[in-house]
Length: 270
Image (cartoon, rainbow, N blue to C red; front, side, top):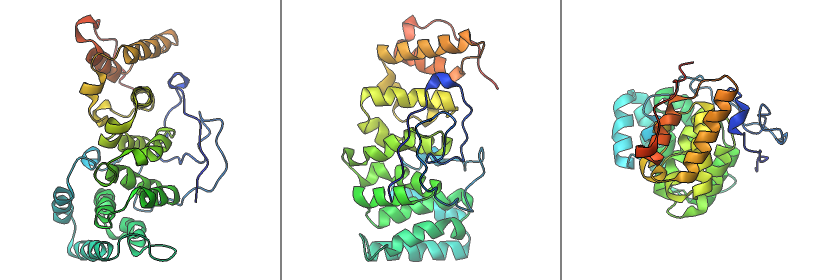
């Protein structure tokens, strides 16, 4: 099931991000959206603003580290369910029939594991199933926002090449801050070209995603004069409109050329 594509929101629009809004129906800043079906919400998905701690590290952790962390936090029934789900996925990877058993387990993870651990459980199932780019795309486009996040977190370990970039690009067109956080991880740092990566950084500033979520920020921002120009223009637009400049903007600007960066503007605490 392919979802309609959306136009990227422009940083100058200053529309508040709604983390729970699916991009297929988000028309606040993306006026070219389609009207395709919206995946059903996962009942275990955290409420906006209550993203479980540690989600920005999901893409960086090895499967073994992730499993140790998750199993330590689950109760006995959830641990048993996860163990069976991982065994099934390892025994029956790939596609079997209309839908694989491990895809059903990914959909079920929200009910079986706590909201704090559901994302990690889904990532582990994807690892156990050795999902390739095609399988990950299917899960992403047919899944809920939570399932899409898991796909994005799993990309760095499962897809060595750029085949997963369309999923990152799709996530970057949304205003879902949790999806954006998952999208700007190590896979994006590795494969987004300079133009796309700069706009991803600006999208984080625009929607309020902390730049700490942007993997490899220091290295990629260093000496990037075009990023510096874009940040300066965005800050000028905010100032001209009587709005405060996000503190994270100055932090990134400093990374682009530390000696030449002026003193920090007023921080946005709102």
